[in-house]
Image 1: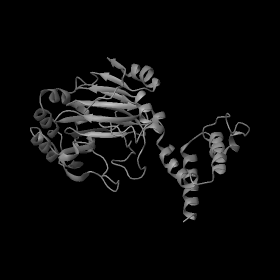
Image 2 (image 1 turned 135 degrees about the vertical axis):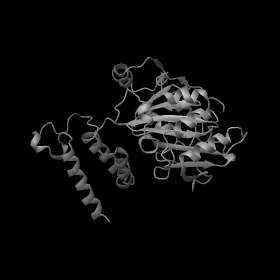
Image 3 (image 1 turned 180 degrees about the horizontal axis):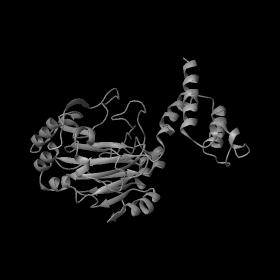
Length: 340
């Protein structure tokens, strides 16, 4: 694939928990954590051979099913929509993890193999014991590691509603990343009909159509990229867009998603969907009014909107808590049910 011009992601070595939390995360920038998981037994097996790392993973496999994506050789490993966006260019199947490993090994010598990908496999459920043998001290051990397997496949540019550390165990990967503010230049596809959960950019990095997507050049000017080999990891901050190319015939990655916001906080994406339903189609003058309302209450561009009220008077605008979240949620359910 032709490489687009990008800025290299800043590289860090010998990363400790204090360094990560006190210096890397506050930058809110991607960080290449070179050699972070060099000592993992899984990485040692990954460096040895595809068969060695497959055997290592089989040692933890509990024979549970995993979700896989299968694409015809014609797609060149690039998972995407079909031509009219009525479906995908791949099939979803559920099969044992052991069968997926076997298929990947069998496909290694094929000059033009079908695309095969198994993503977000929760290690504690499908590979019990893996996370104890291959731990990441930078993070809370309660954070679930997820395993990704595949051959030479491409995951289209998308974001995650969380922070992310992605660790390469076998094969190699190239990440191309765009900051959140480049949303307007990435030409995002449907919000509700996606490839694997999150909306994606419609611009293919292997063949960008600048006539159809002219503002993508602006996004590309802000892009960063990183090449990862076994033992390397990449920190991807909250809502940074990232495009991922698996570049070997057999690839294994382990990632960790986490969100430091409290779990009762609710999803901003769900709020966006509700706003699309209730605000987007209003006349321009009403949308302008609601922009002022959101700026005042949500983004607080004029300061604290309830500073003039005592704490007991602030109601749902008081200090966020599980109790306030439950109150808001109940009110939303009541209001939405009345509109049917």
